[in-house]
Image 1: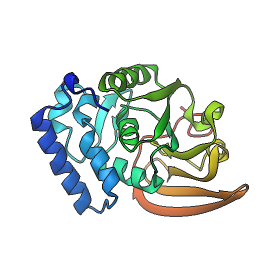
Image 2 (image 1 turned 180 degrees about the horizontal axis):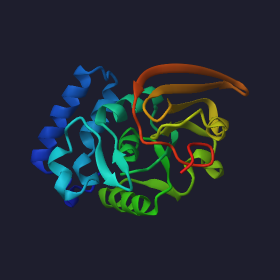
Image 3 (image 1 turned 90 degrees about the vertical axis):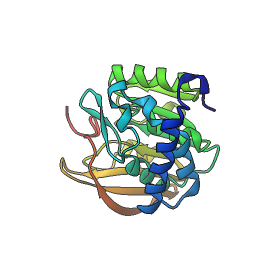
Image 4 (image 1 turned 45 degrees about the vertical axis):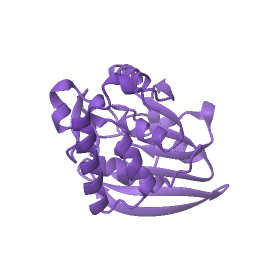
Length: 222
């Protein structure tokens, strides 16, 4: 899938990526497909040159516009909770750097992603295209979802919401899963909503995380 002529396959970063994946497995990530997807995605390509030596540390890093590329453990945790099968249609709310979208592509998903910051939207679109990932992009308010392509088999929200966005729940397919961090400014609890049948949902709650705020009509006010 990757365009290996892009500089993505630098042996130094490949070795560090494997070490990161081994660390994530020790921290509790069990899904082998998710671990292999993170092993395939060149995280350093989604960062400014000055930050690339820190790309395979298990930490969030700045990408501009007061946004971050999420900690790899957080990306792995959310992705694992999605329980993806190849070929499923996934909506990502908050493209950010594009890293999470690349991981979803490596899992064989049909990926749709929304970003509200034009600069980040354009940068992620350029990087993902350069690396050979096929993703559908939208510039806009992710809290409203993307009804034109609904329903989705899975939806992942990469920013902290004050409550579960109803529009996203409505855009789930039967047996579809929404994974979203919900809480206040300081801490969010990871929530998974599964649509059992029309108007029937299962809610599960997992560990606490800290994300940038989900800004939009059905999220936090800017």
